[in-house]
Image (cartoon, rainbow, N blue to C red):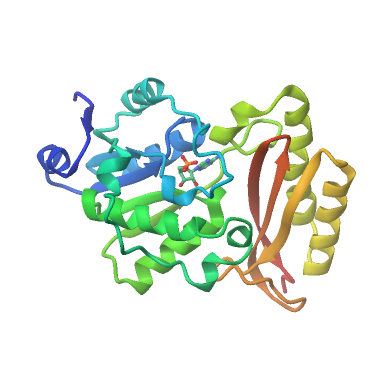
Length: 278
Ligand code: AMP
């Protein structure tokens, strides 16, 4: 089946064939992490739609919107290889008219952890995801655990706004040495890349501990060892549903999340840990 490239709502309606539809939202520069999401969608749905849209609303004024990688032709090739049915690639001016007024608020949960360092980011994410849901009208959508707070907020939006869409989370795909795949990794020099490995190393060391205090302390020590080239924004141990910091007596699954700048590139990563197991 020929891959269809849709630019707007009419193209999407024309491309619809009946059966279940899965949406995989992306900003392009597709890598193995995106491929794993597409494969999960492929298994569950008759028709797979991948959106490729670098969403201006989720970038702050001093962030990397203009230099975010754009590799559309290579992305189309990846989508063909993965037997995607439709690539939805809207123009920014079609997504956001000049008279735009209404948007989605991520609430308090959008202002903590990653949200504390990127004001308005999650409002921008939820607004574009809701628009994509309305345009594509999928039965299910797949998001990566790599962006754990984003995934948790999308689940909250679906619950709070009664959206009839099933949300699937996909595990983080990593390089053999532990570095989480990211479209931004291409900006890392060989030296940066070595420094960046401290993120996954810290998370692994933390996750091998049992109590919140041990986990925080162990992970922080590994980050500190990396030296001043690793500019850490936060290390957080949080409840996966709310992203509130967990207390010392918390039991069950938690997310250990980290964000740091290496050179001019900002990276995030996280792992799931089990706290105070009985
Ligand atoms: P992005 O294009 O970076 O906005 O990511 C699009 C989707 O791919 C999001 O749901 C991400 O969480 C997911 N994703 C990005 N990197 C990875 C990875 N290394 N492993 C799994 N999913 C990922």
